Image 1 (cartoon, rainbow, N blue to C red):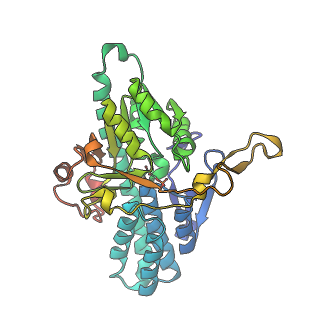
Image 2 (cartoon, protein in one colour):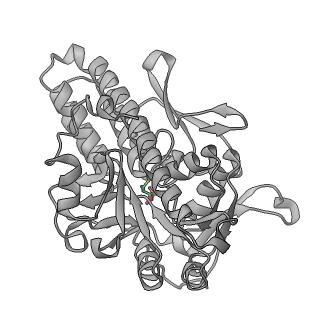
Image 3 (cartoon, rainbow, N blue to C red):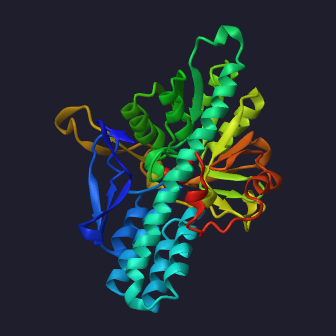
Length: 384
Ligand code: MRU
């Protein structure tokens, strides 16, 4: 996607494949900077500190992290230790484990001398497949938005189609296009008048920081709202659809996503607003049936709740990125990073294979059976 007219992906190879370039998302939207990851430790740290974040991008970074580990030491013990280190960085998004397993299973049977090169190819294939899947999600979501926009009452037809989204499930969360934002970009480029309500998404403000940044750079009309505003907007008919991404979706259609998603789904259900979840196959955990009981929820530092980062506009620090404390000294914070929305509150899942009910039957209808997502041919199967 575009930043000041230049097309970017979120992750790329540098120095002839000896390091990996990423956009430093901890500095956005106020500073656009990139980082070079040259070692396993640097890749793991980039994931855990959220220099890179978003389920699909975490997966691709993990895959390249294994490549970096194998460049340093291609032995069996190194491969196993790197897998464990990367897999422990963030526990909720299933894409990480999925991508790590895919690279490990590809390289483990090879002689050590061939492993790093094979890992590079596999990581690149995962990245390319992610782009293809996200673009296909965009096409399926666009068709859905066009149908919904067309059946609005006549007095609403002249107004933009109003979509609410939570967190950042845009191109910064993937390799390109995004999941929940892909249909929005497709709609904007197709000429459908669209307006996006952007949940700020406390505590880390991925909406206000990243989604607003992305939409602004693509020229998509949007308004940032506090997380508590969504229900009110829905009650007053100001939201035509909600669309979010997901970090892990069970085979039964339960959706784990950024904390606060569940509350949006409840408000949407109460107000008859359709609630959609956009996801690639790599986000489905076919081993789980009960999302609330079974999905591990990452608990992050309480400092993310008690402190907030932004651009200072006052005094000698004006123009600098500063961190300020919110509650009184001594008040504790609690920071579960994700929640689970039960399938019954999800109107439909939008995948690279099409739109389906959030249920086991719906997912099996799309995929036939739990797919071998490790097949490199998945990208080629995406027809759009
Ligand atoms: O903690 P984050 O910023 O990694 O959380 C990201 C989300 O919750 C996204 O909505 C999810 O990964 C889907 S992104 C395509």
